[in-house]
Image (tube, rainbow, N blue to C red; front, side, top):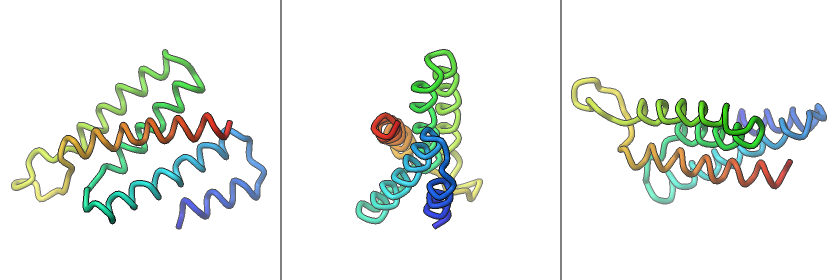
Length: 118
């Protein structure tokens, strides 16, 4: 709901087109991830997907120099989401495929929607 409210505020405030595109990207990404989680019972990483979307948008906006920095940060985020010490830490994490898939979904969906709306 907070993403939907943010999108409404961005649209009502006549924000610049790149900001509107980013808001739509992250709203669509959350809808896709929640749908995957509900339909497939697969715990895809929202953090990884958000980082992947931000990375693809970074490449589009600022080119390869900052885009590659974003890739490194996305890899760190994905690694941080993977469940390593599940039994001892008590923290819930993701299987490696869930974390990586989240980043790839975010990059593909985020980049595609951003290009279409910009």
